[in-house]
Length: 300
Image (cartoon, rainbow, N blue to C red; front, side):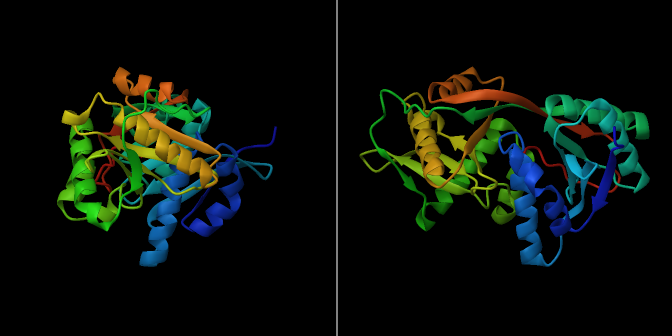
């Protein structure tokens, strides 16, 4: 077997030229990496810099086996790795003086990297986030369908969208996004590049919202979905999620995905009823010692 080796660069164009085909080969499970890296590339175009500490790929015989990337906020993103591969990555990061604040990956990979990092550096970690990943199978619109229709949010809806995103973040404990919203840094939050759709009742009331990423590598992620508490229980969230999913398919997406809270049986059942299928579990671990990174990102 040919030896594997990590290749590290700060050149996002070089990284994508080597790894683009690999990332697009499994757009559903690579959805976070696809959206993160696209945002980093957009930031570089806007700001004239890479927007990340590093990018890397694990190669063997010219074939890409896995990728990693470390953002300026200290979030280490990974595709699936075996335990021995996380050992070599942890050693390589330590050798070049890079210390992640958090790691986000599929559950087994995130846990393995946290253990590898502790063995290499002595830094302890704690899990802070876990989620189910769902992929759309056959779209099944809610039955009965609530009265109303979906409409794309416009400029006049911005204040409401921002307010609802903040309420969503309060409910899920996403403090980093709350801080950005409160600081007026909407564009820097993970919501700034999303396309929002509102479910509007026949009376003209906006009852629920769902956002989607752009089509990247054939993939669209639905995130977030939010209905204010007084309006829940009427099927609005299912309706708006089905609406944006159908729109994503019409726009050319071959994979529509979303993350759910494993501790929320209502949302998990809702998404399954309209055709989403559980495909994987993801997790995040926070390191207690990351001297060059002070800000922590909670979710992808």
